[in-house]
Amino acid sequence: MVVQANALNRTRISTTIVAALTSNRLHGDVPGNVFVPKRTAGLPKDSVANVSRLLTVDQHFPAEKIGTLPPRYMTAIDAGLKFAMDLM
Image (cartoon, rainbow, N blue to C red; front, side):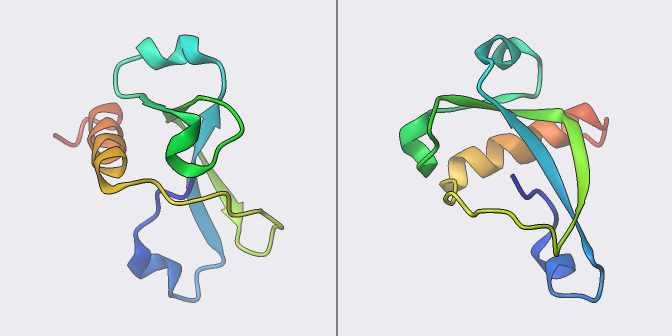
């Protein structure tokens, strides 16, 4: 799941910051992580956005766009990222 600022997505930077999504719902209890129901963004399974597992991927790496999260989930993920990185 892309968590990088849109402004950076439109630059010459060839990488994108993503947060891992997992179907292991046990991770949903970890502070900062966000439960994402499958119906919310067309996911095949209920998932958890794992805000402590960030990755940098090459923008040219083939990836399939599954869907877009509603603003309330992105707000929760933003708060989780701030919590995980102690930016509050």
